[in-house]
Length: 65
Image 1 (tube, rainbow, N blue to C red):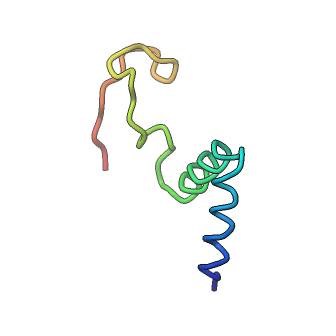
Image 2: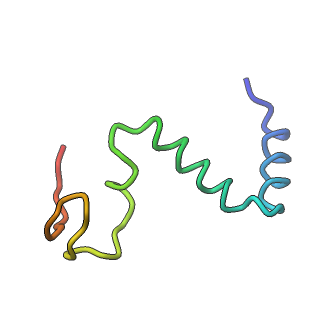
């Protein structure tokens, strides 16, 4: 089992350093590794309806199970 106080200390130390972006990207990568969908499918898109290189056409939100 993980020591919660040690985790909080490490988290605070990393968050207070220059590695904020790396920490956030690391958490996103960790979450993506255990998800059944790629990271780009559950992050909101700011370019909805515009052409993108994944679809080679207009992208529209699609709900799938």
